[in-house]
Amino acid sequence: MPLLSGKNIVITGGAAGIGRACALAYAKAGAKVLVGDIDPVEGARTVADIEAQKGVARFMRADVGRSADCKSLIAEAVSHFGGVDILHANAGIELCKSVWDTTDADWERIVSVNLSGAFYCCREAMMDMRRRAAGGAILLTASPHAYMTGRDIAAYAATKGGMAALTRALAIEGAPLGIRVNALLPGAIETPMMHREVAFAADPAAQLQRFAEAHPLGRMGQPEDVAKMALFAVSDDAGFVTGACLAVDGGLMACLNAGPILAYKAE
Image (tube, rainbow, N blue to C red; front, side, top):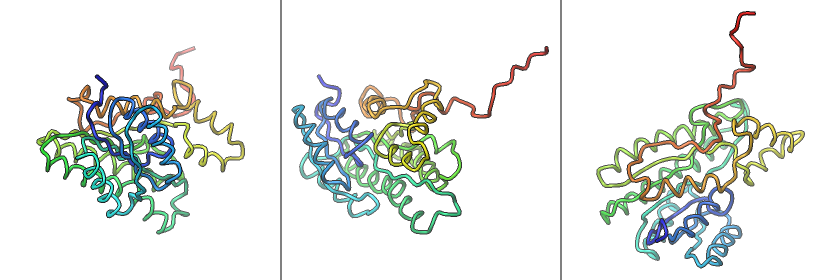
C-alpha cells in the first residue's frame, strides 16, 4: 500500500521548486493534494503533472500572507477532500538585503509570507484536525538560517528562526491531540528561487559553484532531495518524531566556516 494512501494534504508554495517536488512525491505516495500558490499557471502545471501520473490534485490560488486566504485554503480541503490530514507550510520568499537597505515594506512582506503565513495555515489546519479528533502531521519549510546565517539576509533569517520556534511550540500544543509538527532545514537547493538570487551575482555560474562547495557533500541539493525527507516526515514512519528541525543540507550546518583548518602540530 502506498505510504500516504488515504491521506489529504495541503501544501503551500506548491507551484515550483521544493513545493512542486513535494507535491508530486505526496501524490505518488497515494495522497490527495491541494496545491496552494500565488501562481495559477505553474500551480496548474503541478496539478496536471500529478494527474498525468494518475494522482488526485487540485489547485487554489492563495497568498499565505493573508489570513483570509489561509482560512479559505483549508476550507477548500475540508470541502472537497473531507479534511486535512497533513499540512506542509512551504510557501516562502527570499530577501537578500542589508539591514540598512531593508524597508518597512520589505520587512512586513517577508514576515507576513514566511512567518505569519506559516502560523495562519498551521492554526487553521490544526483546528480541523482537532475538530475531527483524527491527529495529523504538520511540516514547515524553514532554513539553516534559523540557526546560522550571514550578511545581507537579516529579515529572512529572522522569519526562519521564528518558524523553527513555532515548530517547537506547536508540537507541544499538538502532541496531546496526536498532531506532530516538524520543520525542514534545506541547504542550498537548486530551485527557480535560487536562480533568481544568483542572477544578481557578477558570475552566476561561479556563485552556484561556491554554494555547492560550501556543502561538505560538494554539491547543490535538488528539490527531490528535500521531497524524500518531507515524505518521511509526514508519514506514519515518523510517528515518534515531533518538534524536530530536520536538516536536508548536505552537511552545511555541521561545517565550521572559520577559514583554513589548523594542524595543531609542532614542527
